[in-house]
Image (cartoon, rainbow over the protein chains, first blue to last red):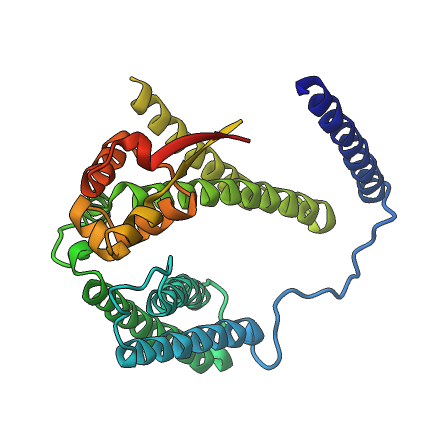
Length: 255
Length: 68
C-alpha cells in the first residue's frame, strides 16, 4: 500500500521537475540571448500630470475604499444583536462580520503606512522640481491624515473586540505592543491558540514563497533594466531573518 | 490512519447544554467546542477529561479512535 502511493507520487514530481526545468531553460535562453529587448521609452513612474500621481491616486483610493468598508463594518456591528446563547454555529454572523472588519482595518494600516512612507520618500528625494512642490505637499499631508484616520479606526475596531470578547480584552495600557500580544495569546484557550499556530505557519509559508518570488522578480528586472542588487539583498535578508526566527523558536522548544 | 471521533454534541444534547455553557464550565471558548464537535481539533487530555467530567462519563465514552 505504502509502496504504491510512493510510486504514484514520484512520477508527477519527476514530470513537474522536468517541466520546470524546460520552462527555466526557455526563459533563461530568451533572457541571456538578447532576444528579449526592453523598449527604450518604457516608463515605470506611473504618471499622468505629476510624477507618480497615478501610483499615489491608486494607493489612496485603496485606502479610502478600505476605510469605508471598515466604517460600514463598525456601524453594522454596533446595530447587530448578540447571538442567542443556544447558537451552535462555529462562527456567529456577528463574529464573521467582525473578522471581516478587522481584516479591512489591518490591510488598511499596511496600505496607508506604505502610502505615507512613499510620500515621505518622494518629498525627501534629492531632485525636486518647483512646480511639483504643491503636489508633493498635498500628497504628504493627505497620506499622513489618512494614516491617522486609519489608526484611529483600528483603535475603534479593537475597542469593539474588547466589547465582544470581554474575557479576552486587549490591554491598551500595556507598555509595548509585544506585551499586549503576549497577554492576549496567554489568555487564549488551547483551541484558539491552535488556530493562531496554524494561521502563523500558513503566513510563514506564504511569506517564504513571496520572498522567493520577489527575488526572482528583481533578478528578471536586473536582466532587463540593469543590475539592481539592493532589493535582492533586502529581500534576502528578510528571508534569512524570518527563517532564523523560526529556527530560534524550534531550538528553544527542544532545549 | 486513525482519527479521533467524539460524542460531545450528543452528550450536550442529552444534558441540554449550549456550546457556550459547556465552554464556560470547562474554562474554554465556544469556538473551541465548535472545533472539537466538527472534528477539526483534537483537544488535549486535560480538556478531554474536563469535558467528560461535565457529562459525568468516562473520557472513553466521549472520545474514541476510529480507523480510516
